[in-house]
Image (cartoon, rainbow, N blue to C red; front, side, top):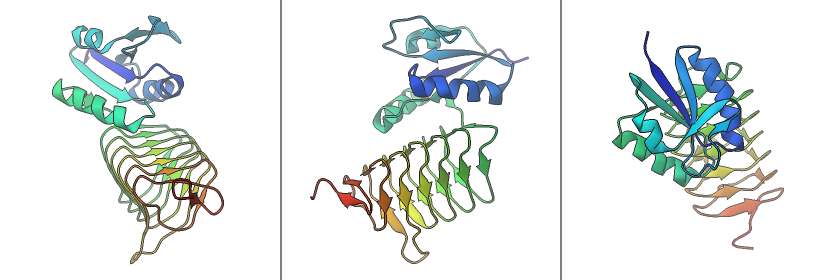
Length: 215
C-alpha cells in the first residue's frame, strides 16, 4: 500500500468545498491535510492545517496537491513552487461532473459538482470550474482561467490565460471561423451576458456586457 499525503492548498471557503471532492476521488488510500501558509489555526473540519514547509517535511512515500485558491496569479506561483519541489498536482473531478468526448484538460484542474465539459474542448493548466458551470463544444481555454458558479460558456469560445468569469455569466456562442474571444486577464462580471469579444485586461458587466474601463 502506498503511503500517500494529499494536500488541499488553501484553507478558505473554496478549499473547504474542494476537500470532500478530493477525498471522494482519492479514497481511503491517503492522508488528507490543508496547506495554508498564513493560517492561524492548526485544524479545519477535522483535517490538520500545515504550512508548505511542514508539508514538505512530512514523511510519506508520495505527495500530491490540489490548489484551491481563486486568485489565478497565486495559483500559477504555487504551481511553480510545487514543480520545483517535484510534487504533482491532481486533477479533481467531482463524481457528478461530466466530461464527454475528445477533451484535453491540463494539470491542476478542479471541476466542482454539477459541472460539464462537453466535446472537443481544449483546456490549459490550473482551470477552476465552480458549481453548475459548463464549457461547450470546441472551446479553447487558456491557463489559470477561473469560472465562478453557474457560468455558461457556449461553443466556439476562446478564453485566454488568467481570465475570470463571474457568477451566472453567459458567453454567447462563436463560430468555427470566428470564435468569440475573452482576452488575457479579462474579467467578466457577475450576471453579464457577453455577446461580443472582450479585450485583454478589460472588465465587462451588464446585459449586454459593456466595458467598465472604457465607459
